[in-house]
Length: 239
Image (cartoon, rainbow, N blue to C red; front, side, top):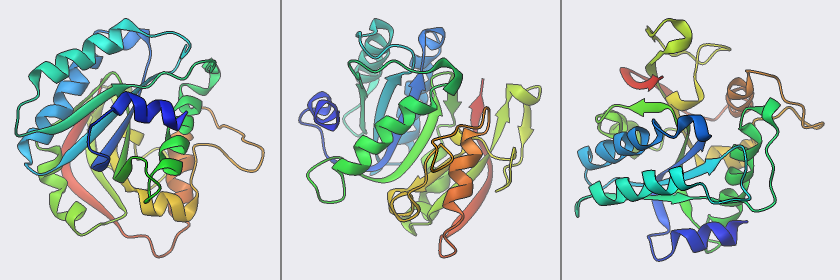
């Protein structure tokens, strides 16, 4: 699986400041281009930041989904010379997602493959990971606002967001159950590796419906040495 990902990336750089894993499905086909363009705008607003977007369809990885390819082509057309932004369509032949897992199984498989491949092992080396959905949007000031924390290598950086789940109101993020959205935080590869955090309860691979986000963060915070910070700016829109 990871070899396939590397083939998709091709000759692009293998060292990235942020690797964004985007879980999407056909219902996101209209919104996905806007998400990728928002990440591109955030990359261009903070020169020197390199971003890899890995888009994965959570419903059927056995076929090439044209809507993802079109969104990636559009983002590529809009990328300027000063931007280090690259997006790939990550196909996983033979994998059929479990609809009751809401794409967390696909996200976990992509994360596992990227974690195995990086860290000096010849694969894609990501300093930070961001997990998001194809129907989300980010502020163009995302990486500018997080830059100082990222430079300091803070393990978990969260930021405020707006969500349609609460009537499109602003949600002040907190490191508590139901107070943080998966798309509203950056997490270092290092702390993911140290804690072996996943979206599933172990050891039985049990998934708690609607709380896979918190399962990951809860595991991350078992590391008492983990540095965490909150940036009090609205940088994310959950549509």
